[in-house]
Length: 268
Image (cartoon, rainbow, N blue to C red; front, side, top):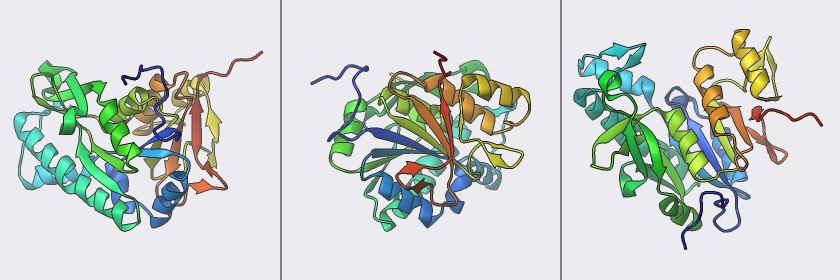
Protein backbone atom coordinates (compact mmCIF):
# COMPACT_ATOMS: atom_id res chain seq x y z
CA UNK A 1 0.00 0.00 0.00
CA UNK A 2 1.30 3.46 -0.90
CA UNK A 3 0.56 6.03 1.78
CA UNK A 4 -0.29 9.61 0.88
CA UNK A 5 1.80 12.32 2.49
CA UNK A 6 -1.23 13.56 4.41
CA UNK A 7 -1.57 10.28 6.30
CA UNK A 8 0.15 10.13 9.70
CA UNK A 9 2.99 7.61 9.74
CA UNK A 10 2.31 5.65 12.90
CA UNK A 11 3.71 2.12 12.48
CA UNK A 12 2.03 -0.10 15.10
CA UNK A 13 -0.22 2.78 16.12
CA UNK A 14 2.63 4.84 17.59
CA UNK A 15 3.28 8.42 16.44
CA UNK A 16 6.77 9.37 15.21
CA UNK A 17 9.18 11.73 16.97
CA UNK A 18 12.34 12.91 15.17
CA UNK A 19 15.28 13.82 17.44
CA UNK A 20 18.17 15.91 16.11
CA UNK A 21 21.48 15.66 17.99
CA UNK A 22 24.03 18.37 17.29
CA UNK A 23 27.66 17.39 16.83
CA UNK A 24 28.71 19.57 19.75
CA UNK A 25 26.31 17.70 22.04
CA UNK A 26 27.32 14.13 21.28
CA UNK A 27 30.21 13.86 23.74
CA UNK A 28 28.13 15.53 26.48
CA UNK A 29 25.06 13.36 25.99
CA UNK A 30 23.98 12.10 29.41
CA UNK A 31 22.86 8.56 30.17
CA UNK A 32 19.85 10.14 31.89
CA UNK A 33 18.87 11.71 28.55
CA UNK A 34 19.00 8.33 26.82
CA UNK A 35 16.96 6.83 29.66
CA UNK A 36 14.38 9.57 29.04
CA UNK A 37 14.22 8.62 25.36
CA UNK A 38 13.64 4.97 26.30
CA UNK A 39 10.63 6.10 28.33
CA UNK A 40 9.39 8.14 25.39
CA UNK A 41 9.69 5.07 23.15
CA UNK A 42 6.99 3.28 25.13
CA UNK A 43 4.42 5.45 23.35
CA UNK A 44 6.36 6.85 20.36
CA UNK A 45 8.55 5.69 17.51
CA UNK A 46 11.87 7.58 17.51
CA UNK A 47 14.18 8.55 14.63
CA UNK A 48 17.56 10.20 15.30
CA UNK A 49 19.37 12.60 12.96
CA UNK A 50 22.85 13.73 14.04
CA UNK A 51 25.37 16.37 13.08
CA UNK A 52 29.13 16.41 13.44
CA UNK A 53 30.49 19.90 12.75
CA UNK A 54 33.17 20.08 15.48
CA UNK A 55 34.62 16.65 14.63
CA UNK A 56 34.61 17.49 10.92
CA UNK A 57 36.49 20.71 11.66
CA UNK A 58 39.10 18.82 13.70
CA UNK A 59 39.59 16.22 11.00
CA UNK A 60 39.90 18.81 8.22
CA UNK A 61 42.56 20.59 10.26
CA UNK A 62 44.36 17.34 11.05
CA UNK A 63 44.43 16.31 7.39
CA UNK A 64 45.33 19.87 6.30
CA UNK A 65 42.38 20.10 3.93
CA UNK A 66 41.98 23.74 2.93
CA UNK A 67 38.51 25.27 3.20
CA UNK A 68 36.75 27.89 1.12
CA UNK A 69 33.89 29.94 2.56
CA UNK A 70 30.87 31.74 1.11
CA UNK A 71 28.89 34.05 3.40
CA UNK A 72 30.42 32.28 6.38
CA UNK A 73 29.47 28.79 5.19
CA UNK A 74 32.12 26.27 4.19
CA UNK A 75 32.06 25.17 0.56
CA UNK A 76 31.93 21.38 0.29
CA UNK A 77 34.58 20.53 -2.27
CA UNK A 78 35.25 16.90 -3.27
CA UNK A 79 38.15 16.87 -0.76
CA UNK A 80 35.94 18.21 2.04
CA UNK A 81 33.17 15.74 1.16
CA UNK A 82 35.55 12.81 1.64
CA UNK A 83 36.19 13.96 5.21
CA UNK A 84 32.51 14.68 5.83
CA UNK A 85 31.55 11.15 4.76
CA UNK A 86 34.30 9.59 6.85
CA UNK A 87 33.30 11.50 9.98
CA UNK A 88 29.50 11.55 9.68
CA UNK A 89 28.70 8.14 8.16
CA UNK A 90 31.70 6.47 9.79
CA UNK A 91 33.01 7.62 13.15
CA UNK A 92 30.07 9.57 14.57
CA UNK A 93 27.21 7.46 13.25
CA UNK A 94 28.71 4.23 14.52
CA UNK A 95 29.73 5.74 17.85
CA UNK A 96 26.21 7.06 18.48
CA UNK A 97 24.61 3.80 17.37
CA UNK A 98 26.84 1.85 19.77
CA UNK A 99 26.10 4.29 22.61
CA UNK A 100 22.35 3.86 22.16
CA UNK A 101 22.68 0.06 21.92
CA UNK A 102 24.74 0.00 25.11
CA UNK A 103 21.81 1.70 26.83
CA UNK A 104 19.25 -0.78 25.54
CA UNK A 105 18.02 0.97 22.39
CA UNK A 106 18.03 -1.19 19.23
CA UNK A 107 19.61 1.44 16.98
CA UNK A 108 20.48 1.02 13.28
CA UNK A 109 23.12 3.37 11.87
CA UNK A 110 22.40 4.78 8.40
CA UNK A 111 23.42 7.59 6.13
CA UNK A 112 20.93 9.22 3.82
CA UNK A 113 22.70 7.42 0.96
CA UNK A 114 21.61 3.98 2.23
CA UNK A 115 18.49 2.48 0.70
CA UNK A 116 17.86 5.72 -1.22
CA UNK A 117 16.86 7.12 2.15
CA UNK A 118 17.41 10.80 1.29
CA UNK A 119 17.16 11.87 -2.34
CA UNK A 120 18.75 15.31 -2.58
CA UNK A 121 19.40 18.20 -4.93
CA UNK A 122 22.06 20.91 -4.96
CA UNK A 123 21.44 23.87 -2.66
CA UNK A 124 23.82 26.29 -4.42
CA UNK A 125 26.36 24.37 -6.47
CA UNK A 126 28.22 27.46 -7.68
CA UNK A 127 28.94 28.91 -4.24
CA UNK A 128 28.57 25.95 -1.82
CA UNK A 129 29.67 23.03 -3.97
CA UNK A 130 28.49 19.59 -2.88
CA UNK A 131 25.89 20.83 -0.38
CA UNK A 132 22.36 19.55 -0.76
CA UNK A 133 18.79 19.83 0.40
CA UNK A 134 16.37 16.95 0.86
CA UNK A 135 13.89 16.55 -1.96
CA UNK A 136 12.49 13.13 -1.01
CA UNK A 137 12.56 10.80 2.00
CA UNK A 138 12.13 7.02 1.60
CA UNK A 139 9.28 6.78 4.08
CA UNK A 140 8.55 3.10 3.40
CA UNK A 141 12.14 2.18 4.31
CA UNK A 142 12.01 4.08 7.61
CA UNK A 143 8.54 2.78 8.42
CA UNK A 144 9.70 -0.79 7.87
CA UNK A 145 12.51 -0.31 10.39
CA UNK A 146 10.15 1.29 12.91
CA UNK A 147 7.64 -1.53 12.57
CA UNK A 148 10.48 -3.97 13.37
CA UNK A 149 11.11 -1.86 16.53
CA UNK A 150 14.49 -0.59 15.29
CA UNK A 151 15.55 3.02 15.87
CA UNK A 152 17.06 4.64 12.75
CA UNK A 153 20.13 6.84 13.38
CA UNK A 154 20.67 8.99 10.29
CA UNK A 155 23.84 10.77 9.16
CA UNK A 156 22.86 13.83 7.06
CA UNK A 157 24.18 12.82 3.65
CA UNK A 158 22.07 12.37 0.54
CA UNK A 159 22.31 11.43 -3.10
CA UNK A 160 21.05 13.15 -6.22
CA UNK A 161 18.99 11.23 -8.77
CA UNK A 162 22.19 10.53 -10.72
CA UNK A 163 24.14 9.32 -7.68
CA UNK A 164 26.16 12.35 -6.54
CA UNK A 165 26.64 12.33 -2.74
CA UNK A 166 25.81 15.66 -1.06
CA UNK A 167 26.46 17.11 2.41
CA UNK A 168 23.24 18.27 4.14
CA UNK A 169 22.82 20.60 7.09
CA UNK A 170 21.72 18.39 9.98
CA UNK A 171 19.03 20.79 11.25
CA UNK A 172 17.45 21.03 7.80
CA UNK A 173 17.80 17.28 7.33
CA UNK A 174 15.96 16.57 10.59
CA UNK A 175 13.23 19.03 9.64
CA UNK A 176 12.79 17.37 6.25
CA UNK A 177 12.61 13.88 7.79
CA UNK A 178 10.03 15.09 10.32
CA UNK A 179 7.93 16.74 7.63
CA UNK A 180 8.04 13.81 5.21
CA UNK A 181 7.35 11.26 7.96
CA UNK A 182 4.37 13.31 9.17
CA UNK A 183 6.01 13.26 12.58
CA UNK A 184 4.08 14.35 15.63
CA UNK A 185 7.10 16.21 17.02
CA UNK A 186 10.61 17.35 16.09
CA UNK A 187 13.09 17.65 18.97
CA UNK A 188 16.35 19.63 18.80
CA UNK A 189 18.84 18.52 21.46
CA UNK A 190 21.18 21.29 22.64
CA UNK A 191 23.42 22.11 25.60
CA UNK A 192 20.78 24.38 27.16
CA UNK A 193 17.32 23.57 28.59
CA UNK A 194 15.60 25.51 25.80
CA UNK A 195 15.16 29.18 24.94
CA UNK A 196 16.17 31.24 27.95
CA UNK A 197 15.19 34.84 28.67
CA UNK A 198 17.08 36.41 31.56
CA UNK A 199 17.92 32.91 32.76
CA UNK A 200 14.30 31.75 32.79
CA UNK A 201 13.08 28.96 30.52
CA UNK A 202 10.46 29.99 27.97
CA UNK A 203 8.19 26.94 27.99
CA UNK A 204 6.22 27.80 24.83
CA UNK A 205 6.45 30.34 22.02
CA UNK A 206 4.61 30.82 18.73
CA UNK A 207 5.82 32.20 15.39
CA UNK A 208 5.30 35.84 16.27
CA UNK A 209 6.96 35.50 19.67
CA UNK A 210 9.96 33.70 18.13
CA UNK A 211 10.52 36.56 15.67
CA UNK A 212 10.30 39.10 18.49
CA UNK A 213 12.85 37.11 20.52
CA UNK A 214 15.22 37.06 17.52
CA UNK A 215 14.77 40.80 16.96
CA UNK A 216 15.45 41.46 20.65
CA UNK A 217 18.61 39.33 20.62
CA UNK A 218 17.25 36.77 23.09
CA UNK A 219 17.60 34.11 20.38
CA UNK A 220 20.99 34.40 18.68
CA UNK A 221 23.84 32.45 17.08
CA UNK A 222 23.29 28.75 16.45
CA UNK A 223 19.82 28.83 18.01
CA UNK A 224 18.46 30.97 15.13
CA UNK A 225 18.60 28.26 12.42
CA UNK A 226 17.05 25.78 14.84
CA UNK A 227 14.00 27.91 15.55
CA UNK A 228 13.60 29.17 11.97
CA UNK A 229 13.81 25.65 10.51
CA UNK A 230 11.35 24.59 13.22
CA UNK A 231 8.82 27.14 12.02
CA UNK A 232 9.08 26.06 8.39
CA UNK A 233 8.00 22.48 9.16
CA UNK A 234 5.11 23.16 11.50
CA UNK A 235 2.00 21.82 9.80
CA UNK A 236 -1.33 20.18 10.47
CA UNK A 237 0.40 16.96 11.54
CA UNK A 238 3.65 18.36 13.01
CA UNK A 239 2.11 20.67 15.55
CA UNK A 240 5.17 21.43 17.68
CA UNK A 241 8.94 21.48 17.85
CA UNK A 242 10.83 21.06 21.12
CA UNK A 243 14.26 22.38 22.11
CA UNK A 244 15.63 20.31 25.00
CA UNK A 245 18.81 19.75 27.00
CA UNK A 246 20.92 16.67 26.22
CA UNK A 247 22.83 16.93 29.50
CA UNK A 248 19.92 15.82 31.65
CA UNK A 249 16.74 13.79 31.73
CA UNK A 250 14.15 15.52 29.57
CA UNK A 251 11.15 13.20 29.88
CA UNK A 252 9.45 13.70 33.21
CA UNK A 253 5.95 12.84 34.35
CA UNK A 254 4.99 11.77 30.83
CA UNK A 255 6.13 14.91 28.99
CA UNK A 256 9.27 16.35 27.42
CA UNK A 257 10.83 19.29 29.26
CA UNK A 258 12.12 22.24 27.22
CA UNK A 259 10.83 25.03 24.97
CA UNK A 260 7.87 24.13 22.79
CA UNK A 261 7.57 26.02 19.49
CA UNK A 262 4.08 26.10 18.00
CA UNK A 263 2.25 27.77 15.13
CA UNK A 264 0.76 31.20 15.65
CA UNK A 265 -1.99 31.02 18.22
CA UNK A 266 -5.44 31.87 16.92
CA UNK A 267 -7.42 34.14 19.24
CA UNK A 268 -11.13 33.30 19.10
